[in-house]
Structures are given as structure tokens and as C-alpha cells.
Amino acid sequence: MDSTVRHPAVAGRFYPKDRETLQRDLQSYFPAQATPTPALGCVAPHAGYIYSGAVAGSVFGTLDLPQRIIVLCPNHTGKGRPLAIMSSGSWETPLGSAPIDSTLAEALKKRFPLLTEDADAHRSEHAIEVELPFLQSRRPDFRFVPIALGTGKFETLEKLGEAVADTLHAQDERILIIASSDMNHYENDAVTRIKDRKAIERILALDASGLFDVVMKEEISMCGFGPAVVMLTAAKRLGATKAELIKYATSGDVSGDRDMVVGYAGVVVR
Image (cartoon, rainbow, N blue to C red; front, top):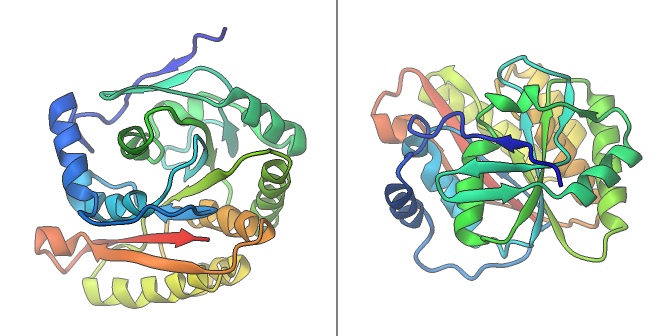
């Protein structure tokens, strides 16, 4: 039994460290009336909960979460390998332990050997950690595979997406693919909304290459475009036919500062 435990890096900063406060905040972010439905994938933001919690909660509150989940995130820290996976152990949050799905992780590595076992890339990275309390609150018995992407090469992202789809197709149960991403960063609210709309349009069209192209061409600073490309590629290969924008906001909606904002989109792919 592997005893690797990844301890919280941003509890008390991005979200409450106190269990009761965290649980109360999470409940406030989930929609009051939503019929949870299955999905193949989603895009959810990973900023501090005060800014993006309502968008993330709107996504996770509408999903019928399966027991097994893959969470893809960008590598903000620059540490570790460009395609970093953890295949064993667990991640701790104030809500308890979230175990890694070792069977699924090993299957992914076998299908896509470029995935490298690397805890360093994950140790201080926040973009998966902040998703976990939402998942723990909605589905306490879930297991997950964390993958941090430090590459922006389309061919690599596409091939990983194909490998994820092939691996999931071989499983005998539904598995959700989460792309952890914020949208455009640190421009004014009006510019950010225009840029984000262009990226969101490609996501809603299930167009992985179109998303990549528009992010590059329009200089959209969407940190998790890589995870989104992987998720869209996999979901489409698994039979996805539609995507829905559940909620969109910018940090300016909370802070009141419209001069320099970050965009947040919640999208569900079915």
C-alpha cells in the first residue's frame, strides 16, 4: 500500500482551512435547485473561492458525479515534468482524504507512456487542489487521477486526449474528465469578456483545435487551454455531442474592479 500523501498547499488562502466554514461556503455555491445529470467532461475554474466559487459550484452542482474522475490542470509553478501524473497515494483537504485511482492511472500511463510519475509538479500547484472539496462534498467516495500539463504543444495534447478516450472506453463504468482552467487574465472586463467569448464558442462547438488556434491567435491568457484541449478531444472521441455554458463571470463581478480582471467559465460536455 503506497503511503504518498499530498498535503494541502493553498488551504487558508484559496479556500477556508476550517472544515465547517469550508462546508458552509461550498453549500452556498451549489445551485439551490438542480437535477444532477451525467456528463463526459467539464471545464471548471480554480481561483480563490471568493472569486470563482459560484462558477465552480454551478458546474459541480449540475453534474451527476461518477465515482472515478480524471482532473487535468495547467502547471502554474513550472516545477516537475511537462506531463505529470500521480498514480498512488491520496490528497488531503480540510474535508478529508481523496484517494488516487491507481488502476486508472496505471492504465493511462500504459496507453500514453509520455505521462511521467511526478509528485513535484503537483506539490504546490493549486489548480487541482481547489476542485477537490467540491467533489468531496458532492461525492465523498470518489477516486481521481491528477495530471498537470506543462506543455502547450497541440499534437501532444491531442494525442493525450486520444489516449484518455481509449483508456476510458476500455473501462466498464462512466468516468468524468475535468479540465481545470480560468479564462483570460489581467485585462479589463470588456476585453476579457470579448476574448473569453471567442474561446467559449470553440469549447461549446467541441472544437479542440479551434480552441487552441483562437487562444494563440487572439492571445487569450486562458491558463488551462491544454487541459481543455485534452478534455474536448477525449470527450468527442467518447461520443460527446453537445456542450453547455453553465455560468460565466469575471473577478470584477465580485471585486468591483473592472480595470484588471480574470474570467471564469463553467462548461459541461455531454
